[in-house]
Image (cartoon, rainbow, N blue to C red):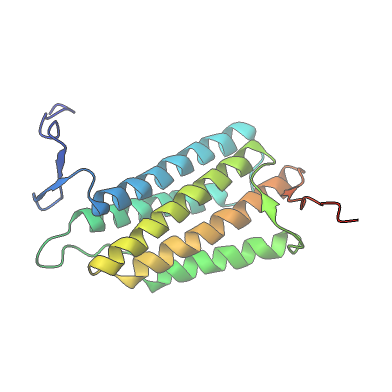
Length: 190
């Protein structure tokens, strides 16, 4: 089977059920943003492996997240008149992210100011992943306002954004690199 089919040359693609939709349709934008989040997490995993300094269990956690994101994309791509196919994502998956967030938060100093993206290379990449994840969340919310989307998907992607933030902080700590703290610009008023 060839990778190219020529069926998308006119600006359409197929959902898993065979339904043809425009490539600029909101559903495709959501799927693409989820896929982009997944791709950035792949880059993060490579960087963590390359650097040799990674929090224990982070690779397995990010692998689990990547598989969940693929499931989410497949669920959204299987949209059909009969409601499509539900992924395996459920409340237990959301709770798993919350547990990971809680565990990471206990390992870093409490926040006292806003943190800017930066620090160790993998931490900066986790911040990029967080930003892409938040875009996917915004598009998912937009889609859910127009048609049924399981609430578990929204909760999962929301918690994932939170997890990516605390993982970035944890990676910085593990690498003995300080978080980049936002410094409010001071204006002279006197």
